[in-house]
Image (cartoon, rainbow, N blue to C red; front, top):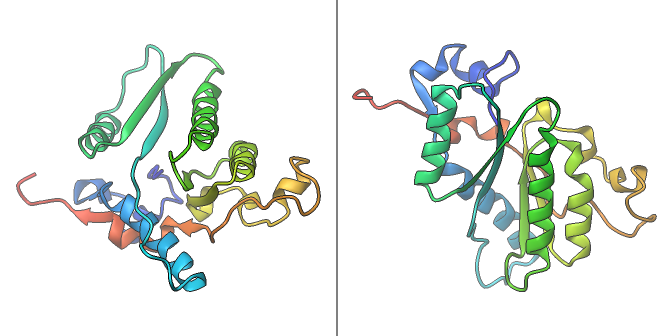
Amino acid sequence: VFEGGKNCPIAAAYGPGWTATHHVDWSMLPSLVSDHISAELLHLQPGLPRAVEVVRVHVYSSLRTGQPVSEAREAMFDEMRRLHYDVHLGSFDGSREKCVDIALAVDMLHYATVPGAFDVAVLVSGDADFLPALVRTRQRGKRVAICSLRNSASSSFENAEASQLLGLVADGEARLKDFDVLWLDDHVTKLVTPLHPTL
């Protein structure tokens, strides 16, 4: 999610060497998502019996065959596993990286057909390749939310007619999402915490 390049919102907030003094607290992501969706639902339906609860987090990523994994990336995956995230790592060589995107989309659509598996699917990505999966998930009667960074998100995520423009659905048949996009840029101070002095 956060790549540390020149457009990285963490680097903008804490400077280019932020990894020496701060780290991303991945335990905060589910609560940010839950709070965001709950606030919108409670605004529309004040009598809801309970807020939204994040029950499972799936992480999809890929590693290039024969290329060593950076310590920072390995530490990130280890931290996510410690938090009981389901980490799915694929390997690829050449141009086969799209297998990870396909795995995410297939799992989202699979669980959309499993009774009681989830009520709201939350995609943390900026990739427009997932638009068809989001539309089809909504067509299965599930709500959809998107969480992303402004500088890496497809403009289609904010475009109410994106699914129609791509020919995914007929006019007025479905929307892309059920909630405003949760922009992680606005929550950097909650997601990033100072490293403990002993680390």
